[in-house]
Amino acid sequence: MSTKRMRPSGTWEYIIRRKGILPKPLSLTFDTEEEGDAYVKRLEQMLDAGILPEDLVARRSDLVSIDDAIRSYMTEVSLPSSDASLLNALIDRWNGQVLTGVDYQWAGVKSMKRKDVMAPSTIRHYVGALARCFDWVVRSGTPSLATNPLRLLPKRYATYTDEDSAAVRAQDKKPKEGVHRDRRLWVDEEKAVRRILAGEKPEKRQRGPDLNFRPAMEFLFELGIESAMRMREMYTLDVDQVDVGRRTVFLDKTKNGSKRQVPLTTVAIQSFENYMKAVKDGDPEMSGFEFDGGRLFPWRDGCRDRKVLAGVSVRLSGQFGRIFAAAGCGDVTFHDLRHEATSRLYEKTSLSDVQIAKITGHSDTKVLMRYSNLRGSDLAVRLW
View (cartoon, rainbow, N blue to C red):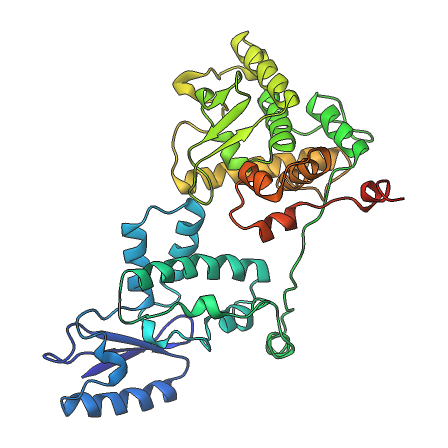
């Protein structure tokens, strides 16, 4: 017998049970009730006759749905926090949908555009995390998924087609466009940001932004623009991860899960030493913080819980957003400093793409190229 229910998303979930044929209840999801009724009716007729459909034969010993695969993957594989967060959001989205229903024509990407109206970059993040999960499923030998169909998606799969855009507009919504982030700090803007971080009052304003732990804010800005590290990689650092003699920072926790050493410029080293001196000398602007527990920055208490760190990232991003606004460059984000630092590695050094990727932590040089936003004016002076 089977049961059915409409999920909050509007899809229909069917649970089919057959002792002796199905080792456990089979959950299927359909876009419409009519489609589900028709499929389940045919399936039940075959099951009543003792016949297990061919597409379910491989699942006799191990019936696996997308959410089953995600849970197993997250249990058995050590994941970076970014992937874990994305996959947690996807578990309920495809609850009960069988892996055998995932193929090249799979509608999962289409629904992200037409139903959820996600930005192309967001779609790529979700699909990337799920593709890595499916890679593991394939390697594990689960017969339900012999190959990873997400690896067959065409280029620009996340870009809205005319049909996607029409479907979104029919809901009185606006299709999302891919945004290539290429904002860089101009020299005058960088000087203005440093003046604000030094405690100067912004022009035409009665007061500046809140600069709680100002020396730490100042050092974080310098480290970001000089090292190309991600914000979370920096504010979760311990003091002993910085090796002044070798001019390196050792990162044991990164977004993609790999460890790496980041070389530091002389500017970054000087900023580090100035900050260390401020804390050790009892600078009143760092009141309440010491290098207890080995922490380099004051914004976390040693906890590495993803939700806690996400809250810290949001608060710091907002605080720097106000600093940039006070400096007259309010469209700059803290993450743009990573773009800026990466671009400077191309402009000021002769390092190769592979060497720069080792510094920035990019596993794909195609992604790296999106970060290296070289100014046309700087390139022009190199021409004849």
